[in-house]
Image (tube, rainbow, N blue to C red; front, side, top):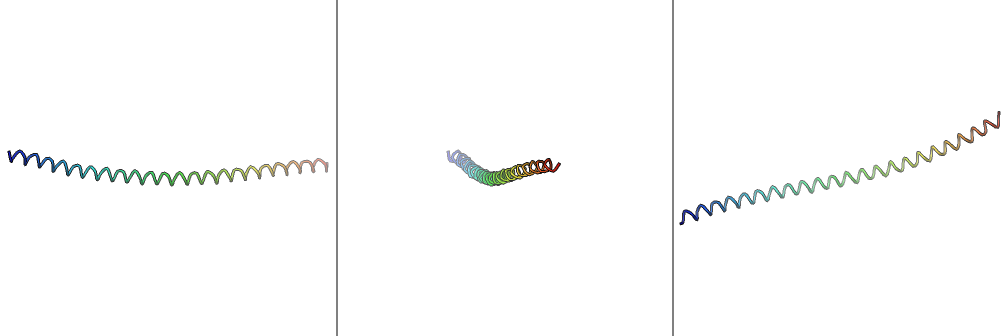
Length: 83
């Protein structure tokens, strides 16, 4: 009976050690996932910032093009009046 208990106790010890190891692996995996999520969040924030800058630049370029177009029309008008 004592020998059977010893076998059961040894199996429980093995199971306990495996549980500790598995728990540690899960904890490490969760930490890695958390870090990856933080990195992705930072990247997304940077992408949004760049997108906003590009939108602002596009608006400025559009305004310059409209101004150039208006100046071009005025120059054509002046040229027509000179001829």
